[in-house]
Image (cartoon, rainbow, N blue to C red):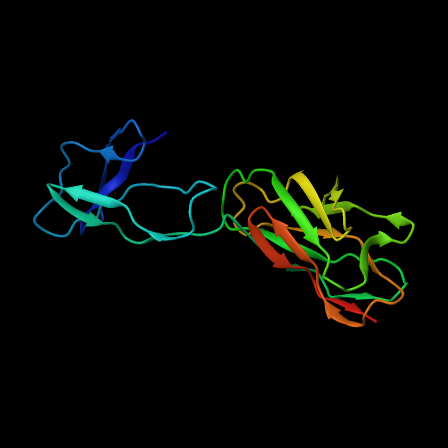
Amino acid sequence: MSHTVGPPWMASNQQTTPYTGSLSEDGSSLVFSNVDLKLPGTTVMWVAVSAGHDAPLGATSLSFTVGGKTSPSTTVVVTPALTVSPGGAPVTLERGGSPRYPGVEVRNNGSQHIPLQTVTTVLPADAGMRFGVPGNPDHQLTVMDDRGRTTAYMGTISDDGQSLSFSDVDLGVPDAGAGSQSVMWVCVSADDDAPTGTTSLEFTVGDRVSTSTTVTII
């Protein structure tokens, strides 16, 4: 692992010089010795940082102490490793008709090594919908990665039949693929007496929540 403030300073002529620091036992600080600040003049210094998958979201900053003077760094904004949004074209369900496949799109925001995730899908309340069709339940989640390859996962149905949970789901977004995306969906149908109108399912992917593509029951 590099502990270089690399480069720690940038003078007005754009020249840079890296310095290698000593990491504290708890990993929370670096100390650099004999740093030439190239003063007088204006000098810029920085270090390389990254955020873990469980890092709190929001704005923060590092603390730099230079010659006994302490200052916060530029603002660091920690954003989600991935985003989830409605994916695919709107779905139309005929009451008592064939199943359809609403889903969501998952986008990698530039994170590396996104771990396997737990995915939960919940039917809208009082919508007269089910996973699969009467007599042929479908408890499967299908994930299509950014290359168009599909992987199916079998889920666990809740006691009331309104939600499915899937464990250890590979989201199909490459580790270093900022902007890469995948799509996932489930199979649903509408009962004969389902209320007509527009609704959607709810998908939870890790700690991110999104509605599915729009579902219109006719």
